[in-house]
Image 1 (spheres, rainbow, N blue to C red):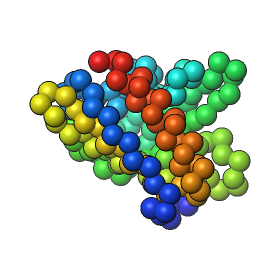
Image 2: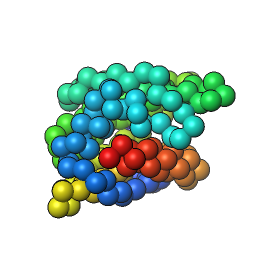
Image 3: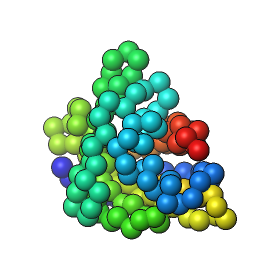
Image 4: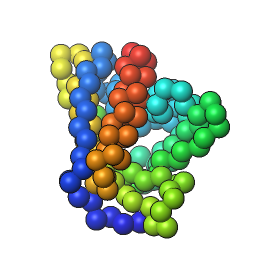
Length: 148
């Protein structure tokens, strides 16, 4: 995996969730919660594995109604509950001989009982990849918001 992450193609999404930073952080890091929201609408999360520590790995397998499988994998680089997560991101099913690794930073900011989630995903190889992931993340955030 390449870890030469560039900010050339970066996406940034912000969403306010009506729950405390503690609760939103837990939803982002506990497998039983990830299974309920951590895939775009139209997909089910089949597997959510989390080793929540710096250097620990995660794996999230999503399946579409048509049977298409996508598995996100990576390693945690920063775990600062309940305010910040930083982790690498790549796809197990990559067509590339050497999958591209991108970087996700999620900040959980207290907004008087609600949480402003600021998601930055960087290191995409093209604007198209960034756009596709922005759509997927927006759909995931819709699902997360509905949990609360």
